[in-house]
Length: 451
Length: 177
Image 1 (cartoon, rainbow over the protein chains, first blue to last red):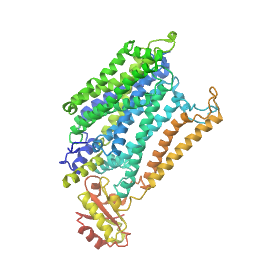
Image 2: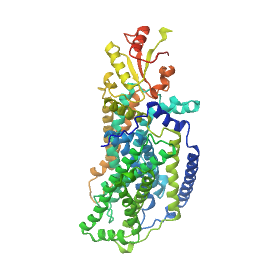
Image 3: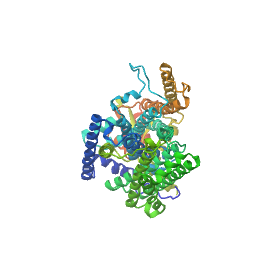
Image 4: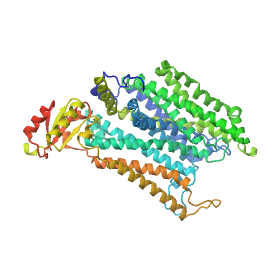
């Protein structure tokens, strides 16, 4: 970063940072707003449970799916959730390796967001299976039927990619959390808290020997996690690109999907950062500088995603394939043109305001722009699926898709599946990295002393 | 009392003073020392000669290899055990196999790294005598501690206490079992 303003104000002290963050689980500052949010998310979760109960009883026919449009909400939301999750890993791992100090106030809750989003993403293809109780057929176990999974299929790749991503995200998050759990354990006064944090802190003592090994492990995992993110979302894009459906069969898909994922994810991190900063008065730790940097990264990712949009269209015309070009026309002017233009407008128009410094530092505007991006990426994933499927090579198999009540109820309910564990995390665990912020402060103080 | 002493622990106010104290203790000839801090102190690994420990790197590589070849073996076996021929294409679809292989290589590397870290650090270990010293809880907040073990050949309860004091320790506490 060019500007030399400190990420953590120099007036902070190690003790102050400890108190500010550790008080959140131990003495919840915003009890009532948290309770309201939690009740709301539990209501959404019940809606989700009711929806999938009905789904399991009646089958995927309760959704608006049909032939030709047999992939819609469940799959477009799978891509969307997974994309939201990717920013958490990128902030944590990539920016750690690049020595970007500002990540240290954001990485913890961004990683928690990743874990919650990947859980939701993983649910989607499972509930989309006609018979979800047979999901274990995806694993190579010695079945009495004598058959094995088909490892040449992108659908099989999915299982391994999401499983790996979920486990690695949880491990990376937890390993980073252990020293902070120890900090909260040592601050806890009540027996219950001491036992709870004591067990999960694993007896961490902050020994130099432990730190040395821990540091190596954390950085190693970070270095591995960056290619993992790229591979997971590239693999997801191959679900589409390795098929022959017009509008999917393109080599731009892997980078286009990865960038779009990071784009929506950074917007989501900005939204969560703004809410947490406001709800828990964390203005000293998540500063305007953080919002500024997040906005810049979102803007950069957005412009790269826009490049993907441009090249998708260019690719189709350049290929000269009649059906590819027809799909582009269907996207521009067809029955689902609203999803295409909706995605373009929500993704890229408000985004341009982020060129201005004043907008980047305004929490309200940044929150609104980020919301627009998250909605825009939602529309984009919908657009990619439905506009390609509803008209392909054979006019006899053209057909329309309309989301049913149960499509919407499953989706809206799933927001509860995301929010409930996330709110529990915010309530019970240190949601900002305490020790990493101290590390930043120590470095800044040293630099200031040197002048 | 003195014969049950496990070691002495001195409290410092900043990471620089801790680092300086650790260097001095090392120069004084103490071997069995450890430092405790709320965050990793830059340079401490070098002072305690820990920077040459590459075990984690090796463990990660082994984990990655186990994941890579293990998953490859599974995919090859599955295609031999129940061959599905599609239009005469090769049974071993290397580019397709590589996708899952890559993911499981990463999974193997990361799980090995984490397990290795816990084993090398002997965690979880929910109780440790250090937790019995009243001020040690501050090691996770804003204080820095230097520990000298009683098994050190140069350890002497009285003189070591004086030595820690001379390094500028704010308090010196005895660690008892």
